[in-house]
Image (cartoon, rainbow, N blue to C red; front, side, top):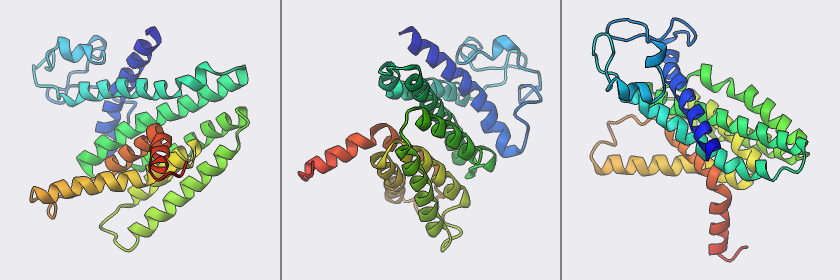
Length: 272
């Protein structure tokens, strides 16, 4: 229980940092400086007014100095960070606790770190894409080297190099498929979606073929269902849809539940 609380607290701290990322990266502002300040009066945020979740509640959603409203988006992202980190840790917990050696423990810990990183950027990218219809290179592109290094080290320590093959195939396949969809219709799917697809393929493919398949098609299914809802509401033809959040939602369904989904599907047709 203590570990869950600690990880949730860490996730909320990351969520607090992601609030900075979500606001500053699309505007080309450094995420390091200047320090966070009220958007209305310009006063720097005091350290005790920057405690995830707690400070917003204590201040009742208002700036201490000018009483301007603080968007509820800030605590929601912090809460989402906490919940997301706990969920990802729960998924990797069995491998961590089952580690029979320091080498295997290191392998599992590196895999957990890789997917916690993916969780963090997924949250940031989803919010940014909804607000700006952009998937910034500053967030997407570093995910390739970070993912390659962490997942390669994890697979190497775990003596499971097959994961690297499926990860490479996943990244390449997703990039090619999305590029083929984007080129004929430049206004339909952006290159940001293409770059993000490779990241999704890398991480989902590392877990295996079932997570990769579900992650690959999940975004299209979820995005298509949302499009149908918009059409039914009479808004589909006029509303631009940010596809990144649906790609990421589909990816995480594949990562967390892909094996079970594929196994259930095959069992339905007596193929297991």
